[in-house]
Image (tube, rainbow, N blue to C red; front, side, top):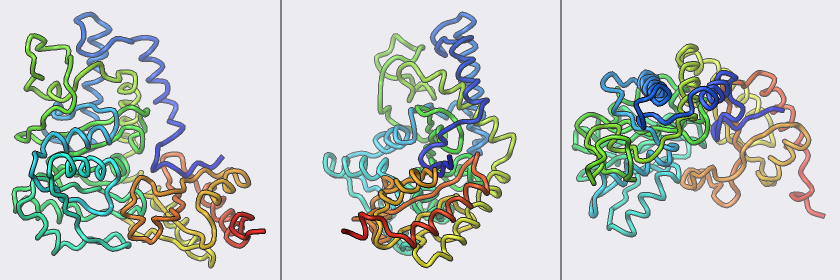
Length: 387
């Protein structure tokens, strides 16, 4: 099988990740911070080492306790957005945002009279920074997707963060598609909050994620409940990460996430990015050479290993089915939970087909895709060609 949907999830994980989850469940099993006995203490050590590993990957130089564990990036983004935005505030977004941002801000707009401002953009991934400067005036929060999950293009985070800083606007970075895959620190780039998921390029299990909050920035808890400490208070503890972590954490998942982060740190994000972008360049060049394929993703060597295409006259969903059935290729059709990007591309009605590479991708995968798309783009499906 040729798996090319790493932008959705890393699917089969490295053996050490599965081993870490199994070892936790069979040898540790207890919850962190929920007892003074040995197994709970060891669980707490694993959670702390996981926070510290995430801090290294994100470039956090201060207290790793400012990283609160979440279920995924969607949970982290909702926690940040609902935790800093007040009724009547303005939030600035871009067309490259995921529904994990678009839906929460739309909810706030409808329920709390929050103003949502969108920075104009091009289908090539470029943003109108002059207009961004105007839209940021008087805003409370800027949300930036570090890299588009549809185009694979890297957004100008440093420039946007500087514009926001000059206007006292908080910056929330959606690093779901960049953490562990793209060099550079969103913290150093000017982020005040960073949301990540554990199950993509960090190689952890589903159900893991995190939100980093800069010192001095306060986030109202999105969920309240038990934290294992300060239990006499009705309010959530003031200290981080307890302030944002209610309920029993996914401790087996954190053991797996720690193993995934350790692998990323050992290989190095620079090396990971160089290897995967070499595969992307080969794939994109080959697909561009096929006359029956429209490549939507710009080259962007600084972006992510994503190549999204359209085959005119063919349904992306049908093409994806044929890729798996006839060529053992797994790729992602549809809108990729990012409808505004597809609006820019003119594919909002039809969707598109996304190929994305990751830790286990090979040149053989690229060759198979190029062969399959050469065949399918030249041979319309029965559904497309009609009776």
